[in-house]
Length: 457
Image (cartoon, rainbow, N blue to C red; front, side):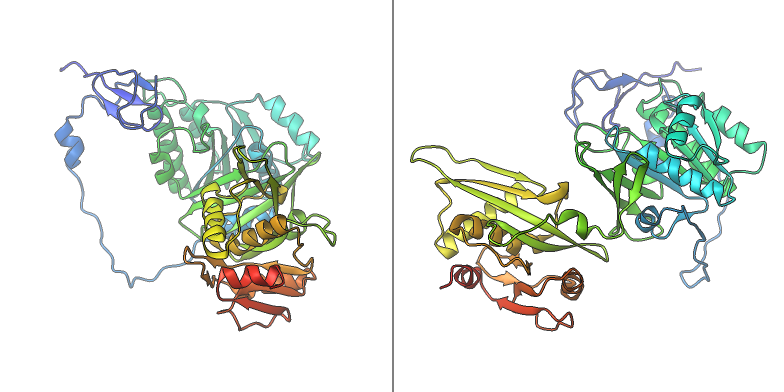
C-alpha cells in the first residue's frame, strides 16, 4: 500500500498545497497552512474527473414535473421567520454567523424553547458550554421549563447515534460547528477538513431524517464565517447576525436562502430578558428630531419588502487654511460619500475642500441602498449652509456623476411608510410622479436644482 502523501490545507480559504509555506499563495494569509492527510490517497486525476469507482443510474425528471412547496415550521419568533422566508423547512440546513456576544446562542435558545413548548421535539447541542451553563441562560430568559433536549458534546458520531435511537427531532441546533469533531477525519476541531466533514454528516442526517439543522458559525476578523467557503455552499440558508455590542439593536439578514428570498431582515433589541422583536424598526432609527437642527435628513431605506426610515446625520467643520481635512463615515460607504462630495463641488459649485466632513447613520444601522444619495447630499448641504431640512420631509434618489437625480425602485413603498409615520413632504427625483401616499412631492431633475431649492435660489 502506497504511503499517503502529505498535503497542507489553508485554514482561511481551504487552498491545498503539497508543501508547507508560511503564507498561503491564494489568500495571502500567514501561518494558516496545516497538515492534513484526509483524502491524500486520492489521485489528482480521480479528484479532477470524480472517478471514485462504479456508480448507479439515476432518475432524470423534466422541469414540468409536479412539485409541492416545502412545509415550514414556525419558530415562534416572527422576525426570525421573516428572515428565513416563513420558518424552518424540514430537512434543511441553516448556518448562522455573527460576532462573539452578538446574541446567536440567545436567539436560537429562545427559538428552540418556543418550538419545544409548541409540542415539537427539539434538541440543542452545545460544544462550547456545559449543559448547566445553557440551563442558567435559559432560566435567565424565563425559559427554564421548556422541554428542550439538551446536551454538551463535540463528537458528531455520538450526537447522531444518540438522536437516531429515538424519533428524530424537528429542530437540531449545533452550537457551534467549529467545535464539532468527526472521527472519520484526522485533525483538530475547527480545521478545514473537520468543519467540512462534520457539517457533511449533520446535513446528511437532516436530509435523511427530515430534521431542520441549525449550525452556529464563528466569524473571522473581517466578518466572514470562519472555516472553508464550501460550508456556505453546503447549507441551504446562510444568516448573518449583525450589530455592534455597544448598541442595543441587532439585524438578522439572509445572505443565502434556497427556500426563499435574500432581501428580508429581522430586527431585534437586546434587553435583560434576551432578544425582543422590533415590529416597527423605523421608530428605532429616528431620534427625537426638533426644528432648526442642521445636517439631518430622514431617508426611507428598503430592506426587501420592508421600508425602514433612518436618520442621516452630517457635520461640516471649516478648518484654518493649510490644515488637512478629515472624512469620517459610520454606517455608509465612504467611497460613495467621496463621490457625492465631488459631484456637489463639480456640478453645484459648493466647496468642501477646506472642511472636515463627518457622516453618521443613527442607531447603528448600515445603509447600502444607492437611493440614499439624495438624502446624504441634503444632509451635507444643510450642514454646510446651516439651513435645516424641513423636519416633516424625507428624501431619496440616486445621484449620477453628471449631477442627474435618477429614480429608484419601490418609491410607493417608501412614501407609504413615511406617510404612516407622520411625514408630509418628500424630496425625490422628478421622474417619480405616481403616488397614493398623500405626501406633497417635490421633484428635482438635477442635483443643482435640488441645491438651489435648499439654498432658496
